[in-house]
Length: 212
Image (cartoon, rainbow, N blue to C red):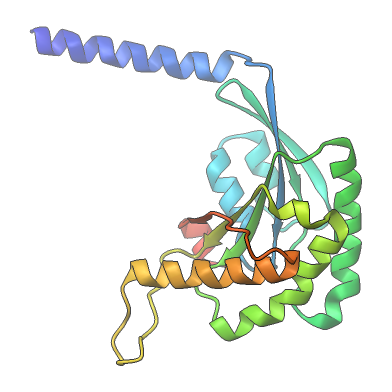
């Protein structure tokens, strides 16, 4: 009986905590700038993180066509998301990327980002990464190297199978993630001109993102 009462009280506390988190206002706002290449599943990932039945999540169901700001209350705080269209890695698309970054900068002048999320794919071939350098340099030239100081790399399509190693056998998933993280971090360092940067990398897996 004591065990049952303990579990019952625990459920009550959890429900109360959930209600308090949803309804209370902590008066805190976190502004997040979302950047990433086209096809990385950025919108799908954010949609999944926000929750399927929220107005903010609805805004991320379709592909982003222009820079926009979406606000969402979560756990008593306000998330202010500055969303951008997918960027193109080709050097011929520098003008396209520059226009998007210029539009995004107009938003960040009014709302300085506390965090920058840069989205990339876990399963991108290593040879493609060097082609991303002009894109990352465009981001740096628009916002300054400091844009990377609070940046977190989000690797989507996390369910991708590891490639084969030099011995012809698949490498471990831990090694796969470590190698992929290192490559992206290295390209960001080159774009920022600061080899001391060590941006944290997060791995994200969602069915929606992995379908893209």
